[in-house]
Length: 280
Image (cartoon, rainbow, N blue to C red):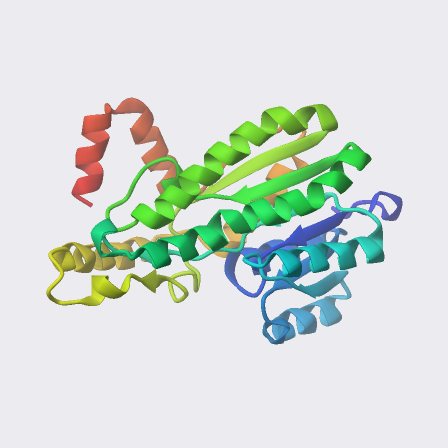
C-alpha cells in the first residue's frame, strides 16, 4: 500500500549494494518512500538502477562509507539539500569477522567495530538534529540473533551486536520525547552474500592454530544452517512491518532459527543454553 504523495517520507538505507540492505531499499521505494540507497561504491548500484527505472520507483543513490566521518556527513548533507527531511534511517552496513578470539588481532577487531558499531554511531548522530527538529523519525538498527547470545568463533562480531543492542535500547529512552523511535532487527542465519563478505582472522587460517578444528567445525555447521536460513527479502519485510507498526516494539527477531534460539534462551538456564550452543 503506497503512502500518499503529500505524506511522502524520506528513507536512508546503508549497505544497499546487496542482501538485506538491497531488499530493504527496494521494498521502501516500492511502497512510496523516497529512498536513498547508500553504498561505498556507486558502481555496485547498476542492477538497482535498472530495477528502479523499470518499475518507476523513487530510488536514489548516494556514496557513503560509514567508517569515514566526512563521507557520512557529505552524504546526509546532500540528502537534506534534495529533500529537506529524513524520516527513516536503516543502519544495515556491516560484515562478519570469524575466528577464535585469541587468533583475532586487535586491528581486525578494531576494523570490525569501526564498521559495525562506530559506523552506526556516525550515521545516527548525523541525522538526529534533523529528526529532533521534525519531532519525528525512525532509526532501525540491524543487529543479529548473536546480539543476544554468544557464538563460538564469533566473539568480535557478536560483541559489536551486543554493543549495538545496548546503544539502541539506551537511545530509545532519550529520543522518545522527541517523537523518534528506535527499532532493533535481529536476523538469524540469512541466505545472502554476507557470508562472502565475511573476514576470517588471519591467524585463524593457520593450520597450527590451537582452534583450527573448532573453526572448521563451525564452518561446516554454518553451511548447514544457511540452507535452512531466511532470505534477505524476508528480513526486509520484517523491517518494513516494524517501520509501519502501529504498536511499535523495541526488538523484532527475523527468522525461525533465531526465534527458536531466543525462546530456548528464555526457558533455559545460562548453563543449559551454553551447553546447547557449545554442541552446535
